[in-house]
Length: 256
Length: 257
Ligand SMILES: Nc1ncnc2c1ncn2[C@@H]1O[C@H](COP(=O)(O)OP(=O)(O)OP(=O)(O)O)[C@@H](O)[C@H]1O
Ligand SMILES: [Mg+2]
Image 1 (spheres, each protein chain N blue to C red):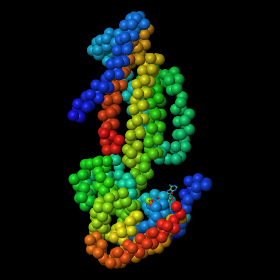
Image 2 (image 1 turned 45 degrees about the horizontal axis):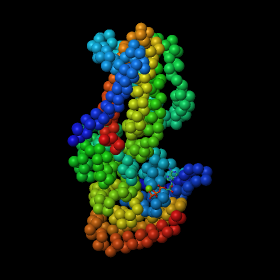
Image 3 (image 1 turned 45 degrees about the vertical axis):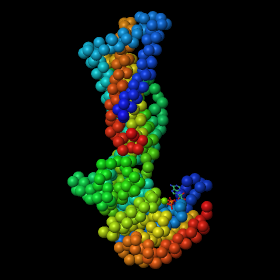
Image 4 (image 1 turned 120 degrees about the horizontal axis):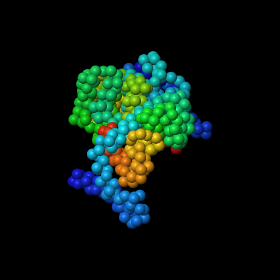
């Protein structure tokens, strides 16, 4: 019964995506855009699956995945640590809050030229950009969530003789986990977008670079393939994220 | 054991909303004594308990525990909160073991001690359940076991049975007395129920509100160990309940709405 419902929910979830593809197909066939500029989804997907067999393409995808994942993980560690520390120490919060207010709205992509000059054109500058963009939503969600934790949870730990710092990490952080993970999910999506953008601007490898190379050579089919690839990567990471999330949030009332 | 000396607490929510929650409360509790605190809602019972626990600082006065001024929470005073305050991400066993593991007790010993406590509160079959999967009375028993685990000398219980139905409540009262009879911890017990206070306590402290003060202290001179069935028939028990209830009604009527 439950399995049936799960599958039917998944099928319903596929409907809008099929709709999107149908729209794409319709526009491509309507002649609004010349076929040379807008290939049909069938052609693009055929090329995508063909590329999945190409080691060179997989290398580019792997490079993108590495930058994305490394940047995201560092952003999680930094955002969570800074957010929790700001809840734990008023002095630290007094330093961090204005810095966050000033830096959060800055378009980090504008820093990218400076990052490439200091960190080079390789992985480091792209990872740094991902961190800069993904960290803020995680930091803010952690801070908000940890500030709202019921004080009696922390009191229960303190009464058991647990130090304030340990209480912060063993009680306040887990109690704020639903909020932290919401921030992390937004951070993950931002990471997908930003790593691609960085690779489009200056890179010699990665999915973003593939897109730019195809565009320069008017290979329109190959232009769409990296987009499909990054979307698939995002889907995979999201599924992985949900797995971790379900484990971490076991026991929370709002989780099924 | 506990000496509350001239404790006052004022909350300054805003300049026009100053509130004197406690005014010059003095009370001493002997080692092994079971003292209940009764009083109208909002008279500062929880606040007083939090101050003894070291979670909230008094505006004036001080609390001594074994002649040492309280400067913060410590494992000599175990709180049991009205809202249970269980860790939702930990199982029943995980909740009870938490303090022991953090305190560096070896895992095997922490496990044995926690299981023993869960047996005592009759929850051994539920050790792998999460708090959300338990009833209110079961959660309360987990909270009590979690606090007993680090063996505090003093228990600070804030209406622990307040949210429970009458049957569960009397069951837990019996359990609590049974546990208490074993090692006679010092207990400060906040409640709304006169009967509960008389049944459990050596002394009942009646507070009045706005500002919260101690109005009267009743010595409950009933034999121990107490059994509910016997006490309900005991004339002295009935007299205590009637007398304190009458005082409670007067206090509540005097309280500004
Ligand atoms: N953090 C706070 N800020 C401002 N006022 C507070 C705060 N905590 C408590 N008070 C006030 O102090 C008074 C006493 O509150 P407290 O919770 O100690 O009452 P109580 O006797 O435990 O009531 P109840 O029986 O309803 O639990 C109340 O009038 C309340 O408004
Ligand atoms: Mg209260």
